Image (cartoon, rainbow, N blue to C red; front, side):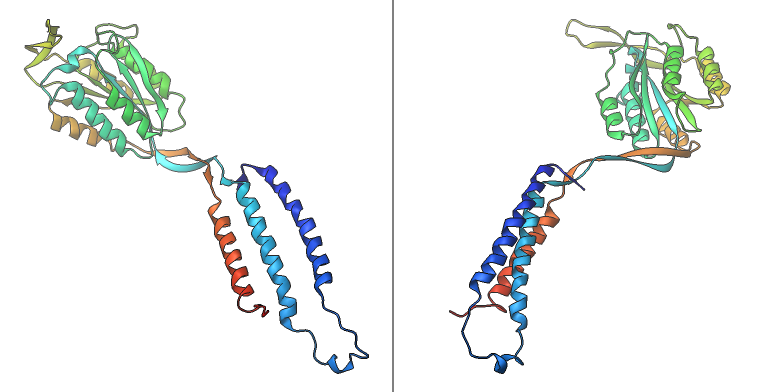
Length: 329
């Protein structure tokens, strides 16, 4: 427990004059009577009530002390604690190129991938997860974190068009590697979701996979797209609406398989929402390892126990004063 206003503790100095006043008052209020001898009263002794009445003064001092503590505003303080748990570290690398708006998934590839990835993240309670997005370039949307609310919010707010268009798979993998390579977990994985083939970027996809293998990072690749043709966005009309056209679905499955094979991961082909869900369910069975998780506890006011004690002391004082030690005029 900490005190937000510790300087109020100086108020305890008021106990000195209160105790002095009480002692002086007791001497002044003692009745006196002149007698020739007190021998007849020697065997009577002092009543326990005479002694017990001083207990009321102690109750009042204790009540004042509780009031001073409340004024000091006692709190439970912020602190970090470390606990050990089972988990792994994962980067979700999501393709946000325009082709992800193709409508062979419900409602489209991007929303289907984003929703399934969000469900996957929500179910990995003990894992540290990050999000990388890529199109013609790559970008870290969320660094590695255990805060699922941040991950979910960022994923749901994500839009197509935030990056230059294109499909830089190699750059997406490279950015994900940079974010996960220094993690403490033994098991590190990248889940790559894309619907096309590498057509831009600085790093070749297979080269990026070889680098990932050197760091012991597995890459699970998911090719998103149905078989045959699909409705792809090809232009924007005068009203600002997307124009769609039926085009063949082309996914570089050979490269995606090679990426997964080089790193010890696995390639999946998701041809529908249901298949995509089953893919994430299978990846959910990833190897786990022990992680040190930092937990944060925030500050809260903790004056209630002192307020309850103050109420009990005041109630006890009034009860004793008007029952056991009641004075008759």
